[in-house]
Amino acid sequence: MIEFGINICHILKNTHPEIELTHQTLTLLNDLVKLFIEKIISVTNQMILRDGYDCVTIKNVRKAVDKIMVGELKNRAIIKAQRAVISYVIAKRENKQIYPIEKQKSAGVYFSVNKIETVMMKNAMVNKKEDEAGVYIAGLCEYVITEILDLTGGAIKNSKKGKIPSRYIVYLIRNDSELSVIYDQFLIED
Image: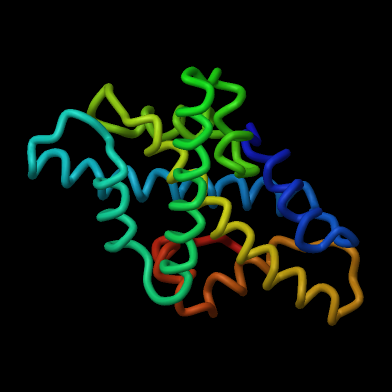
C-alpha cells in the first residue's frame, strides 16, 4: 500500500511540475519514507530503553537524527523540521485544539502527520508520544524526499525524459554521500 503517494506527488509538483513518477518509483519513494521513519524510531527505541523514557519526544527524535544523518542534509532537514514544529505550536496556541486532519496544514508540511504517527507508533516501544514528535518527523521526511526528487528531477531534465525511473533514485542514493548514510542497508535489485 502506498500511504504517502499523494504527499510525494505534491512535493514533485512543487519542485519539478513537468516531471512525473512511474508507479514503481512512487512505490520506492513510499518505502524510503517508511524506512526513514522506522530507522529514526529504531534509534529512538534504543535511547528509550537506555534512558528509561516513557514517551517518544522531539528530544529523542533529534538525538536519533544526529546518529543517522550527516552533513548539510542533516542540518537543512533539522531546520525544516523545526520550522514545521514552530508553525504547529503557534497554530495550536491560537486554536487551542487542532483536529488530526489539520496537523499537516498547521505545520505547513505536505506529509500527513497522522500517517507518519501511525508508522512511528507501530515501531515504537512505548505507547505515548508528543504531538510535536510526529510533526518533526514529517518535516524531516519532507526535506529528505524533496532533496531526492530535486536531484533526480534535475537529472531527468538533462536527459529530456518525462518520468523518473526508480533506477535513477537507487543510483542517486548509492552515490550521494549523505543519502547513502541514511539508507546504508537499503538494497534493491536493479
